Picture 1 (spheres, helix red, strand yellow):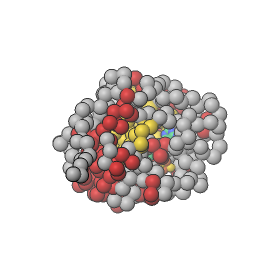
Picture 2: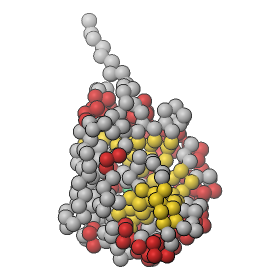
Picture 3: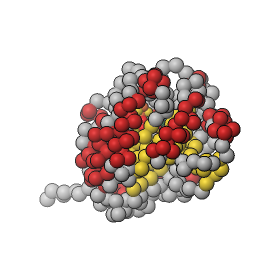
Length: 338
Ligand code: SAM
Ligand code: SF4
């Protein structure tokens, strides 16, 4: 008599790593592709994954549901540029339906090039907050940093998101010699548009043209002009994420600082990352990963592999900007999802 084996039942065991950190936040990279080529993120002639190497939208939804069953409360869709992925609307709707059924929040990080067209869909899917990457308000500098981007398109995207009722946080990567003069203008833009602002130190991920350390600037130095002009003080806003938050005198903007290089934040890390290839990376700054794609397609023990990944979550990243011309990991941020 033939024995029909059924795939192992999905687990509901909570996600707790080898040193007791509870994992409740999933970054889901839905594509490695992008319509921009930001200099600190990508090389100009990036090679992207072939279609055969990536998860389809249904597989991504299946995996995300599995993670929610195991205690993931927040999912952020990212990439590459998530809004260039065909089927992003289907995925957003499917994951949005989990809100209130295990999931607390669905968010997205975008460069805003296609935000005007997608903002109503995101709002309808249940997204309430998004992050928009905006490193400068100078059109020529925007074009230079992104190599191909149009600032006006990004600003219209932010407008459309606000009109659709989405809260917008601006992400700004601090870049010596490229946008040091932009902190105060972007703060004013955030005040006028009801946005918060998070500053990020450039991280050594993936080969780019030139040496990333040429543009690295520690955030305490980047914000010195702001400190000279206005008082800032820490506020309590525990998100489990890497940012530390500050209030600014005479400003409604909450300022977040992400300082992986000058001030390591790993001890409270609550996140994992799933790439478009179906790999779980337990740390943005380490190469260790576990591949779920084959197990998913073959009906093997996906939850067992998730447990293997959890047990191996590193204590901390391994970023050192001074390792000239040698990134900490070969993957680009766009592959793992920022
Ligand atoms: N394409 C979308 C965007 O730019 O918002 C989402 C993906 S992008 C990889 C996510 C975030 O990572 C962006 O805010 C981007 O500025 C940031 N980022 C990319 N490469 C980085 C690097 N090497 N160091 C620090 N931040 C980086
Ligand atoms: Fe694309 Fe985002 Fe990377 Fe810029 S930072 S190249 S928008 S993935």
